[in-house]
Length: 224
Ligand SMILES: Nc1ncnc2c1ncn2[C@@H]1O[C@H](COP(=O)(O)OP(=O)(O)OP(=O)(O)O)[C@@H](O)[C@H]1O
Image: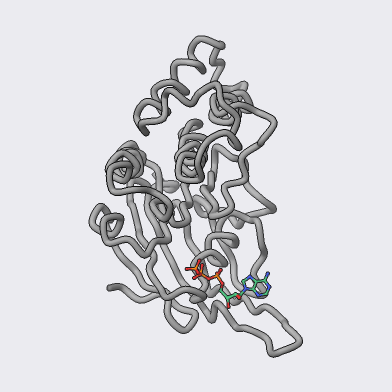
């Protein structure tokens, strides 16, 4: 019972400042955020307001100057496992030496606890790629598909292991209007299955599927 009292993600008084010879940038200034299981929160904010910097702190890629990130009530200790917290970063980070299907399968192969055999992994990969409209690209390599297609591959990889927390940076930035609904369906579906989602976006279509919208301004979040 007590564990349900904790939000899946709780950012407490986060401060992050980047030193630079031409003047330090104080990006986060006491930022607070709580996101529950099953909740999809979108973060808006002008370019350079600190959305990606926030996501980097929440997944442990970066550390705050002060403040804490709690996952399920526990202070983050280094980068959490991929099935605890998965990320779709702007830079995607696909493994270019692996095929599209192998990239998406990776989080599943890293989870022996799931005891998934090769056929079950292949079925999950197929389901995700087909759901995103890129099933025919399974055997290609990331550099043989467009950037918008790579972005959907990276989304499929992020969700394949059913992470408890999913952090997503600009998921529709490189998509045409026809490809966007499938991405929105997948994001919403993850939240409906119980994941906590934080999605940085400039896209109103993404904001429309949110349970809650916040804006990052002057280093803090406000409800919109
Ligand atoms: N490693 C770093 N070193 C120095 N400055 C940084 C670093 N990372 C980010 N910044 C600065 O922090 C600020 C916030 O950047 P960030 O990428 O988080 O913004 P954003 O809101 O995600 O922007 P966009 O919408 O364009 O992606 C910017 O002024 C950026 O130049």
